[in-house]
Image 1 (cartoon, rainbow, N blue to C red):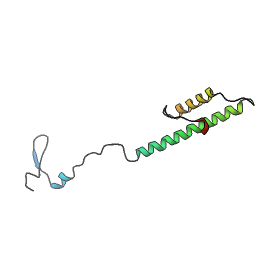
Image 2: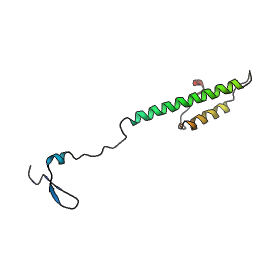
Image 3: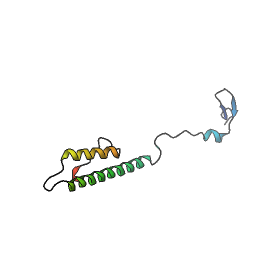
Image 4: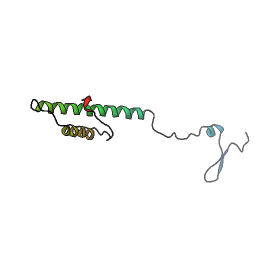
Length: 102
């Protein structure tokens, strides 16, 4: 290597002798999401979904106990409970909580 290869010009136009180690150790910042954040997000979503489903189940059970024998809980009321659970646990609109899982 020549002495020209070891010089580095700064923004001001000054040149300084830079050892080869510093030329090789210039690092760039790594872009993207932090390592493990996607898995953490998935785990958080699963936890929120399970909590929402458990909430719907307990509220539905309370309503079933309160209703008279031979009557049933209307689907409109069940859908309202599901929407409350989605808002409470901050689930996206595309997520569905199915009645057969309750």
